[in-house]
Amino acid sequence: MKFDLKSSDLESIPENERHNYILQRKINYEPVILTPDDPAKAELRLLYVWDDKPVLVNNLVRLSKGKMMGVDFNKEKSWVGSSIAYYEK
Image (cartoon, rainbow, N blue to C red):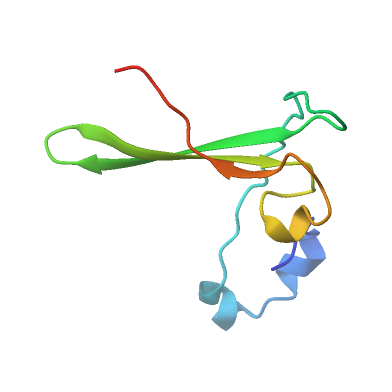
């Protein structure tokens, strides 16, 4: 995995190997959740299944204080991790 790409990073990938890569646009999360030390960023992931129409079946809330979401970016930080969000039907 590589973050903060430059054009030269992309150009260095041989054309016959480019199908082996996924390029994603980085989202800038805003640290808006107040915690006892530093504000946290949140990401809400929604899982839908489709039959005739989309039906929300699960969700995941992730909190982070690191550069990215995930355990590797939040070592030795508090008030981070994942949970579930409740919603009214």
